[in-house]
Image 1: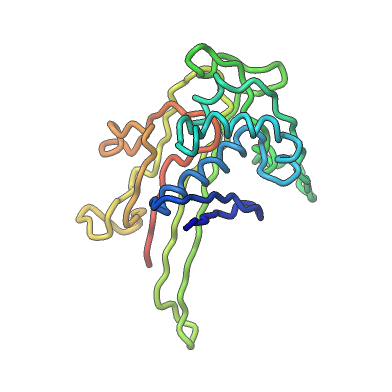
Image 2: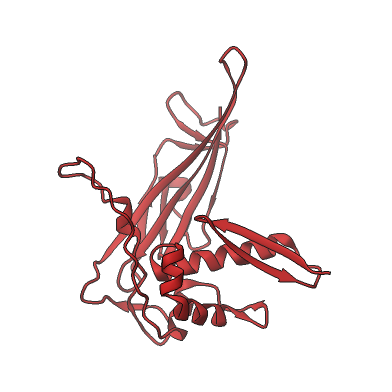
Amino acid sequence: GLSYIHVKRNGMIFACSTARNVSPTTIVEILSTIAKVFKDYCGTLSEEGIRKNFILLYELLDEMLDYGYPQVTQTENLKGFVYNEPIVVEPITNTGNLINPKTASANAVHKPVISSVNVNGRKSGLHDNQKNEIFVDILERLNICFSSNGYILNSTVDGCIQMKSYLAGNPELRLALNEDLIVGRNNSNATYGSVVVDDINFNRVVNLSEFDTARTLSFVPPDGEFVVLNYRMTG
């Protein structure tokens, strides 16, 4: 029989069907990657964006899958095979009453990854209306279990450092973390006031040669949105 697997992103369902016995985790990963690539090329993942960029997204899907088998799934590698330009759908903005804000609007990152590419499919320059910039977001999800008396029974924080790059060329970036960062709650080096995380994992592009000594990460950012690292903390 047929198996149907889907993921939900921004209120939209990305689904596939298969008549073979495949790992659900593999299919979920493929669907999540497709949604991510669509967002990278359209700037924002929305119904209007998909409708206006149907030809572009169909072209992407045709390169990503060949008779149902994943082929090219990385944003930067797809650029050499895609020829349609995205139609930018402006998100709803809300400037509020902020005067001279120190941070960029959340909508600033909602734009497609557009740049000229070289023969290797990597970035070689910027369009005239494109800025040389990178966005960094720290996202955390807090889970707390309370007793009937209002006391905290247990708590966890699942977080990540997420980036979206619009940089020209292939520059190496360096990201410095807290020098008092301790990995492992039972680590003997932990002192009062240290930042202690239970576990941490890094993107494959991250160079960890200086992490143990200086808590510094170095990497060449791939095109589009990507997670630099994930971490977990428990109370």
